[in-house]
Length: 526
Image (cartoon, rainbow, N blue to C red; front, side, top):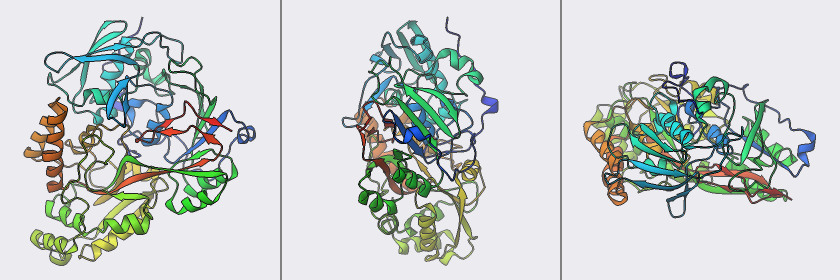
């Protein structure tokens, strides 16, 4: 008998802080940045083992409820399935653990039928109780993962393979079906005993079983009984290595098979090496400059707008990233459902910036304090370089700035603080293409920049959340929501991120989602 999910899942003890390109998360569990890569000798030549070097530090808990960190999302995607799978070409959900889903006549209650015969890695059966418990816990406002959601969920088990989902508000939730493509399915028993299960490792229904974690490395083996077919590669090692140069050297020496977030400067190096290849693609991630709303004068809209117009975005893309990025022209990436470019975003107009400063009462920057920009180093590529470029752009209109580089862990520890700095550099890489994964996570009250939405924006957000007709929902997003954000400028979108992965040439069959999750089911090493 499955145990009922606990009503409170360690809410009092959750630690907020670290985000990759994802969001809130627990503070780091592992040691600080590694300077060497230690891989077993046999794995250098073992065609059954795939070694991946990640760029973001591990968190204090493996529980999907306690983070929105990018590397953790990638790690859990190897072991945990979702109810639905998003076809990113058609932008339509397809069956996964769920085989059928349908709304009632009010478009409020969703009935979901599940795949039978699926087992968790511990050998227990996957049933509707697990799916229901996972949906409730993952959407709960008491958990960090609840920040993805515009509403909490309430579920009712009908039978072993059928359950219903109802938003707790009693109102329709337009993002619900898309969000099920990003909701990891956990065991109800594990959810009821998180300290002994969820916190310590993954027990999912996915293609790879996590067998141990040590030395900043998660070890996996293929799930031979996977309902979607056993993976071709037998073992995976996913290791955190903070330094991008160390990751590159490990790839070139054959100690690693895949490295994350290769620097644009290393592309030519990898292309010139017959043993390595480069994989690039546009992701769901945008990089943003976040004004801390509680820190004056960042609460002044005209100041935020002036900063936005003062930045030379094309210079960042071309001169710093060498073209391996795109200028942000909206508050969501162009890979996201409903994307539309928005007037006023990504526009470089220093004369207009100067006019806005004058209108705000800070002509030529007089009266403004010296602002600082906190940024991480080692995780996102080129952060120090492009933030120093931004500081130069701002100085040209009279806004004086200091860039404060920080190691990833220290940066993550203060990211969600109200007033640690005037501005902080951050990215956001949702694991799916549903826009609420970015919009609700950032613009609901009290989120990453502590912005307080206007009444007009709050009304738009509510209507967008509750609209279930796709075309009407898209119209609200494109014609109202995104333009309202451009008017308020609660954060300043900088670039759309292009993933740059270094891969050994003998690795075949590697695939990615636009959220940069690994799809390793068909990977082989020649």
